[in-house]
Image 1: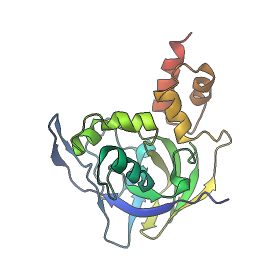
Image 2: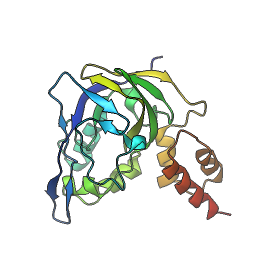
Image 3: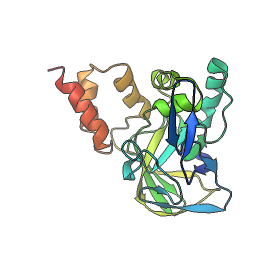
Image 4: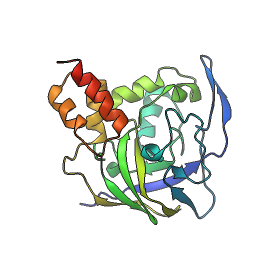
Length: 221
């Protein structure tokens, strides 16, 4: 069975803007817009022309591309009455289909993306910016609890990406640990020594997440 993933849109924003909510405000490039050109170049740190305002927690090769599955939009509409559209979660790639579900995407999965090659590096860690965007401070908590966080891709090989391209699956890491598995440990089962040990040794997982799990594991000794 193919693990290819459909791409609904490629989204970027070239400059930061002020987002204001009842509880907080921030300068951010969160509200990304679908590109209108035929395609766009991907380099080692992201799509050319896309801005990352908070470089301390975002950007870099491990977080070159943020992805979210638009199939989840219905859930958030039903539960929170949010009308969501492409780029709703600040994602660079708005995806669709079962193969884009966090349970079906494995850390270390590699895909051909146009001329580029990318690899799943870590779950997206929902942050306060999503709460500001929708004027609902608890929204990140809902995302964490559900495990429907989205995920990041690192760039293995840069190249030109067309709007009509899809993520064509190349290979998976032998461990086949899903984005949802990682979220389950972090947000729901942080004392599971066996799983913590597995994640600490999971080489395609970003160093940032492996260090986090190592600290969690050390507290259990």
